[in-house]
Image 1 (tube, rainbow, N blue to C red):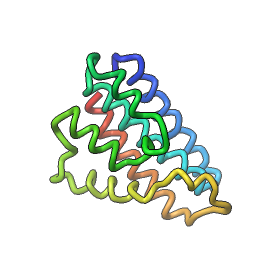
Image 2 (tube, rainbow, N blue to C red):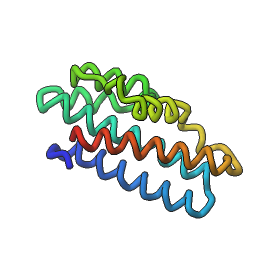
Image 3 (cartoon, rainbow, N blue to C red):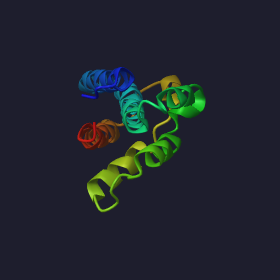
Image 4 (cartoon, rainbow, N blue to C red):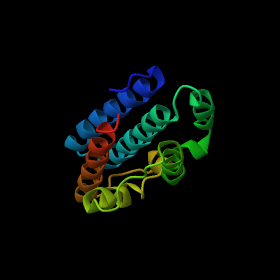
Length: 139
């Protein structure tokens, strides 16, 4: 659990979105599950970035999190790389694969009617859980 109150807020939101996504997946609400699971990854990136930026850059970083661009994983990852100086390991093929899988996420999933195939949703949530574990070990 992060010590910083803002990082802690993002961390807790990430955990709740993952719990919600798991609940929805168990109820066969696959598209909604993936939509919420994507927010889990976004919030974990933000918790990591706030933690790595430190107190002197925190307000600057929080201001960057406003607007549609703040949902972009590539941009969030570049911020993490900038503030941490250590990008996620490329030698961890499981983690790299998880980032590839979640890279398909987009906020406009919330407008998609119907359900996606259960196998796809389960694979997505498993990738999110792998990223959660990696991020949690760094907080």
